[in-house]
Amino acid sequence: MSTPLLPGLLPGLGSPTLFAVVPGFGPTAGGNQVLLIGANLSGATSVTFGGTPATILSQDPLGIFLTVRAPAHAAGNVAVVVTTPAGASGPANYTYIGPPAPQPPTVLALSPQSGPTTGGTPFAIVGTNLTGATVTFDGVAATNVNVLAGVILTGVTPPHAAGNVPVVVTTPAGSATVPGGFTYLAPTPPTATSITPTSGPVAGGTPFAIVGSNLTGASVTVGGVAATGVLVDATGTVLFGITPAGAAGNAAVVVTTPAGSANVAGGFTYV
Image 1 (tube, helix red, strand yellow):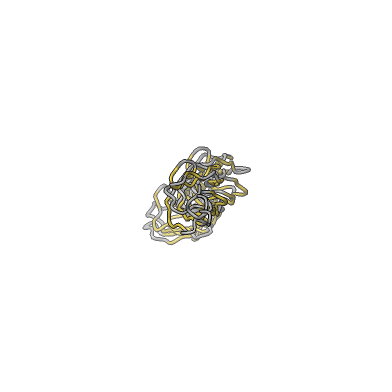
Image 2: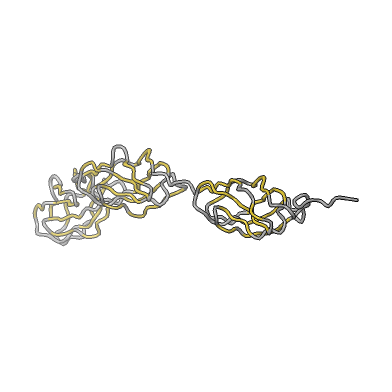
């Protein structure tokens, strides 16, 4: 006469036993598939990760494998427990891994390191963890800021008084100061060494050229009256214009930029 098998010796009749959780880690957001390996896992009614229910996706009729979708949970180690009509398994370990903590920015170099007080100088900063950064020059925000791959930041300087100022890069993770800062340079006054021709009719209309330096943005007066058609070449060293009408005799020629004024030696003679 045969002896009946005791409960627990046949699959599904004994208490569940959990041997392994594969993989043994996952994101805090959950949603990843996890394979549970053990015995008597068939008929599972619930699987919990740190007390939070997981979604059961499939069960092996032999009670060896159980596939679940991990729930969301805070970072750290948690116990995984399988429950069947026969009871709850002993816990198996699973580790929730949170996203890496954001790293503060670092700054290696700024180019160029100087520019005019009027601002408008395009610049580039090389560093790390620059994504989402803003930049200030002595507390004033730069404009047109753009970040490439988190390592190159470009922008345009704001206006500021002459002198060296701190440059600070800021992200949600912290701030970094650019070594050496940025130096604002006062504009250089113009010079005017000669005018050609040196004379013309009192009716005006004489095309002329003035040679000098730092002439960009200049205006010109002849005898106190503005010249017309003023143009400056790309180098800022040659200025072209047309004389206004004037009284016969010598008239002062003055070149003026935002940085100052310069008199042309000899002036212009109306004849």
